Length: 124
Image (cartoon, rainbow, N blue to C red; front, side, top):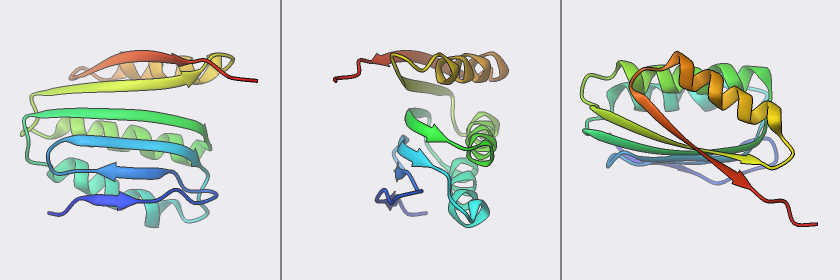
């Protein structure tokens, strides 16, 4: 298994999924071909062979399909028996209560994942 490193593009977030358990996804997510983009990330999460995962998530915007795939990634991590602990950094913008609530709902759904919420102050 190899690391997955993808640069951000207009409708795709930046992704860094490393085999040492350091994961991040950041930016905007509204890809036209969701399966092509997200399914390799789900597969990576389900096959990851490490004891601890640290996952930084800061999606400034994601469409409904992207949100479903993010849940699929988190469920794959949660169901991976190699992984004992999962720390999620959930970053959200000060004025985006809906995105904060999405993170809180995910926290309630997932047993192995421990969330820490980070409020990003917007600079005008």
